Image 1 (cartoon, helix red, strand yellow):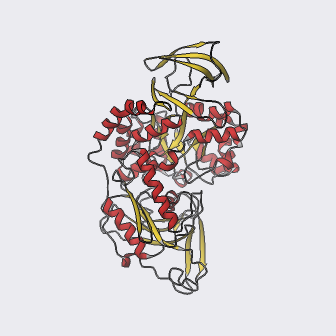
Image 2 (cartoon, helix red, strand yellow):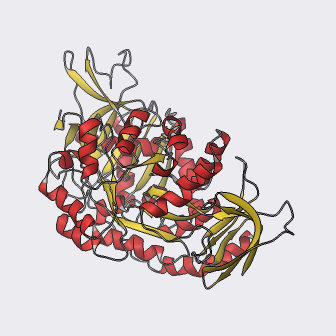
Image 3 (cartoon, one colour):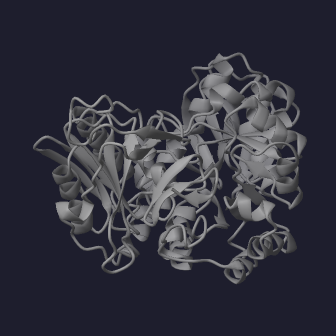
Length: 554
């Protein structure tokens, strides 16, 4: 197969007119030509998401890939951390097996923190110890050790944590990091163990500490956490130390754009084309020892065509492993070309892997009494951030009953263990969601993925939680008498539906939540992170209200 047009050579940093010939999935010849019309397409290496949890798209890997190639993505570095917390090795194997049913490049890792911290802090559906990690590291289909979220364990020289790191180093595989707020000697110590990336930086100071420690900075622009604006200045001075990622990309965001949106934004902001392409095409392959190709002779044939090199470029086609998997002008044939792959992957979804034993609750199960003089500990959530604040308020009345109380924007948040029979819901307080007439609930709750719900009344919360239980996992939004939901029967995280159908239903959920009063851009993802105790400051797990700054329960 031959592809002609303007060749974007990221290695030599030049554009020239030519023809690319592909045989058996490999670029065999690149021939300069002088008869290429000006309106011919530009051919360039495809984009790579350097850190993503595919589960956050609610799609199986094959369906995620089918949507991602429309955006010019030819591969992802995927940490199956979410399904690993629910199903352990069974979940990891499911993701890898499903990804084999489609033409796409996956680099799957072994989740390092299952659960994300100690079982005394939260309950997950599985546990992977250092022995399990060692076995995974020796597998050819595992490319790296997933984000080391237990940075307190690293800094405290915890033997089990260090054994996981050593297992990766022994096998020569990269180790991803996750250490928000670390600076100085702590950052240096964290990096010296062999951890080589971090996607949790939210300030230039944090990111520079990473670079000075020898780490790669992954600029994250996901559905909830957005760090592009704060970190993009680094691209000018450190293009070889920067990668782009989405981390958690919701389905209705994915169908509108993936890494291509970050590329366009960087170009619009005036950043050098070659630096941008280095970050999205070159650096991920170097970091993770990948051979997905850079549009050079002898490379794997993974590349895309775009209509121009301006910030407003459009992806025209995507070639993966030598075959065109997307063409904007013949979408029907693209679907047909992938139909066999989709049918194959659907065949393995007859028995959905899951772990769900929670039973329905009543309003009595989530009663909470606040009296005058009590100190209320409240999680303060922020739009576009996974970080929270810890508000301590001396109450003069019950904010959940007395509407004249000045903090009447506070709602209940409930976390309900879905893995242990006869568990009891844990109740806390949250502000920032603004729900005034309804509730939202989901079994996507990072990272243990217990049930989480926020609502304006006990009745709404109970109704939403019990619908989650009925579906054995999913997301629910209630506004008055209206209820919208999507079932996620695969581990309580993933739907077997098509990507665009999932995105449509996700959009309906967002509309319903807004009618209930919540104006957050990504309310479900933001709610999901209210349960993650390794991100400061205050979070709620199925064991209680946890202060991750002082590493103790309140």
